[in-house]
Image (cartoon, rainbow over all chains, first blue to last red):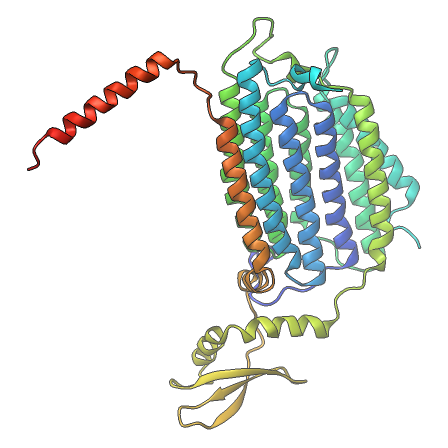
Length: 116
Length: 321
């Protein structure tokens, strides 16, 4: 049991298609939860948190495919996803702080008059 | 082409998940978070069991028991993120889901990314979120109950959002479960070659291992790798100039970090530069956006300037030493 958790000393073996399907299902379900959250929540911060959740779901799919094909491209791409997520978090939070100072509320509907 | 899970079972399970999520989205009349969570967990459980059954029917391996544990924790805490009424708890549950995702990465033998995820996401990004949540929750409006704002307590159009999102999930999973059978696993040849390519760039690692095994004396160097039927052979060059072939130990393989480093820095150096520029621009943008626009009237500005000039002339007039 314990050796499952220890890091492999040798090159890892490929996972089967069925095991890949398990990971892809978890990824798709997490993406869907993020989408539901983004559509239903009205708090700006939680909405951005839900986009981070969708990034993370994409990361699981990338890493699972990286293990399935036994190459490093998927893992490299997750590094760039993390970069974009960090940049997005910085900008989104700065925007949220800016908007909060103007209206004193985190509600997305406080800016409803902006809709065309 | 047939699906891994029977389509009827798949769509019924996804509908059950959708009902559960729709129930647990916060709303004015009732907030059935626990019941909704249990219903959604039932749907996910049915699907995971069906997937496992399909894997067993083919005689293939099941994912490790840790996978099931971590997947349940990850999806459960994600559900809490989108349904919890208090933003601070939502952010904390998101940290939990990141930790269990890092566990999934370790199961997939991506150790470096697992730790990078914990350090960058849980350690840096989520803490920033928590700071902003606490900063923005300071001022309160009077008509809130128990300190929960109205916009946190009531979701927006939960039924429509859930139907649309779970229709997307149904489309995604039916495509995945049909198409995953068609992906060819990597050929053993190409995997072995990829492994050798990484090892070729790590002569120091090979020399250390061969010296430890006693296959190589001090003063000798490894000049190349050769892949043969019997295994990987290293060309060892002696101090005198003669060379011989030495078989590498079976278990000598590049670690995850070494392979990832060569892939990232060797194959995508330009992309790293672009990522750096993106981060720099995001930092500049954040500084500009979050800056407080202070209003100073002209008189105060003139007074401050005069005080500064006076201080400078007083400082300049002081004798040195």
